[in-house]
Every structure is written in C-alpha cells, then in structure tokens.
Length: 418
Image (tube, rainbow, N blue to C red; front, side, top):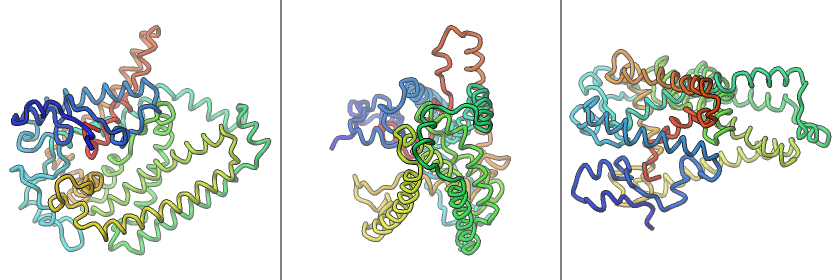
C-alpha cells in the first residue's frame, strides 16, 4: 500500500540533494505527501481533534525547523554535519561510521572511560542534534508561556478552589447525585506505586542501576510539570514531553549508568503523561455525568489490564519474530524496524552511558545547543509583549511557542512524511 510519495525524489531519482531535501523517510520531506491516515495521526494525533490555531503552530514550526534551521546548519557544516546523513537517528564516530557502543561499555553496562577516549566522541546527524535543541527550547517556552498567559488565572482559580467559593454547575450536579472519590484512594495508589518502584530499584539495583532517591526525584519532576504541561494540553491538544529534561537531569547527576537514566526518564516523563491522561478522562467523565467512583475503578482496572497485555505482547513479539528491531538483518520493507525503540536506545547512550556533560556540557562539542533553553524562554516573552503592545490583533496570542516547538519533539523517530 502506498503510504506516502516523495515526488522530488521521484522526479530526480539520481540526485543526492533531491533525496536529502525531498525524501520523507531519510530526508527533510520537502514536497513529500502522506496518504495513510494512520501514519498522519501516528505521533501528534488526529488534526481533527485539535483547534485550528494549534495545527497552524505545528505547521509553522515544522516549516521553520525543517526547511530553514536544519538545512542552514547542514550547509554551514555545523558539528561536521556533512559527514553524516542529514536525517538519521544513528550514532556516528567522527569519520561518519556507525559508532561502536559495545567497545565503550563494560560488563556491567557502565562507561569504560579509557575505551571511550580511544574510540573518540560520539556524533549525531544534523536533524537529531537540532531536535534536542528544540526540545530544550520547548520546555523553557512551556514554563514561560504558562506563567505569562495563564499565571493570573492559575492564581485566582487556586484561591477559589481552596476556599470553595466558585463551583460550576457540572460540579454541583455531580456532587448532588454521586459519591465523590475520597482523596485517600488516590494517596493509597500513589504511595503503593512509589513504594513498589523504590523497592524494585533497590532490590535489583545491580541490574536497574537507579537508587531510591532517583525514584523520588523523578516523581518530583513529574509533579512539577503536570500543571504547566496540562494547561498546554487542555488548550491545544498537544503536550510537550519531559523526556529531554529528565534525561538531562539524571545524566548530569548520575552519569555512566544508561539503564538508570532510562528508568528515571520513564518514571519522570510517563508518570506526568499518565497523570494528564487520567485528568483528561476524569474531565470527560465529569461532563458526561459518569459516576466518579465508577470512573476511578475503570481507570485503575484498565491500567492493570493494559500493563499485563503490553508486557505479554512485547514478550511474544520478541520470541516469535526473527531479528525484530535489528534493521540490518531484516528484509527490505519489514514493519518490525522499531524506530521508537531505536531512539530510546540512542538516548540511553547519549544521556546515560556517555552523559550530557560529555555531549552537551563543558566536555562536549554540542555545548552551544544549551542556548536553546534561553531562546525558548525569550520566545513566549516576545509574543506576550507583542500581544500587550497590539491588543487589537487577537491572532498574536494564538502564537503558542510550546506547540510550535513541541511539534518537532517526536522527530526522530517520526519522519517528515508522517
């Protein structure tokens, strides 16, 4: 089935620059058109469920990033960009060859520093390196945007909630007709989950590498970002991810432990995502007048069933499909290339095994990418000042920098054609 068409590559099949610009798989996707709706909705969700301004922000961010920033960086040969593919999730040595990860890893999956110094620094493709910079900018933009555009609302609503002054009609109806979910139900699940995670990490510390304080810190990060990310999700149907900041934090604190970094990332990022999904479901149930306790039990039961099914399915796939996720050994056109898992593995090497200090810190050659944090913080401020200066231009406040930047956080593994 034809899922996409890169007409630039079709017209110029033997021209390298045409493949770099036009390929929707390994290029920038200039002119590439997707035909498969499931592919179009695979990473950012269906555009039919998002407000038009959010879709416009996504399109603008994609165009600026893919057709301006990345080609410019590649043309200027930043970080020796021309030695590597313009779009790839691979890890490379300085000569453009595949990086030998096994050569710098000891038997306990820790970094062998002497071997790493012999092997040399790790390099990323232009797109991959820039996508991390955009991830930095997206996080700082999220905090500043929420503070500037929603800070007063958060303060007022928080006061009303604690004082019980303002109760909407839907809440009145629900409280009148149904028993509410006691807070201790939520607290019991929270304490059980944290205790179980801490016990597993401590009991299997030789394999999992993450100490108990890592679990606590990950939970603190998730709690801190749930409100700002939830506001962006509620207003745009897009949610910035915490994968980059969680990797950055634990990678600096606890370098050389790739499995620990991945666990911290899961506990920090996915806990926040699941919290927002639960809030989303509760909000839907609230307006549909579903009994809160029934909603709560359905969510808990659904989570348990989903966890078991996902684990068994993954286990079955690994046991039954030969060479699953091994791209070099799979036949052409195989659907079992596992792009998301490859990027997850790459992140464990970049942020865990080698660590952010040797990649993005004072020991790394990508240290300038940290300036994206500042750029992301300034961008919403510029929009806010423009909105204040031109109040008769209502479209200005619709420029949502976390969405404009965050649309690219899934690339890679996402491709320009979907």
